[in-house]
Image (cartoon, rainbow, N blue to C red; front, side, top):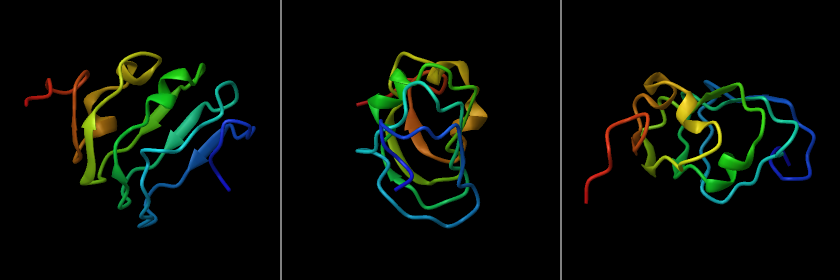
Amino acid sequence: MLFGSKKTTQILDLSRNKFSFDLSHLTFPKKSLIWLDLNHNKIYGSIPAALTKVENLQHFNVSHNPQLSGQIPQGGELQRFDQYAYFHTKLCGSPLLPCTK
């Protein structure tokens, strides 16, 4: 309902709601989305590579989702955000520490 490549959502702030869902397989509007804030929830899975295709992302925060894990996809705007956008997760890769095997 809220996510999808054909949506025209510009700002999506679902922070501090205790939402629990798998972020891994969601798609996002490539041209319209400029703000995605999902901090302080119970989101799990990984950050989908589809987020690297969002063209004008100006704000991004998935912090305080302790079950969110895996490597941060490279490309797009995701490395532009500082470590605090990813704080208190199990994510790795730029701008955080490299992933280890």
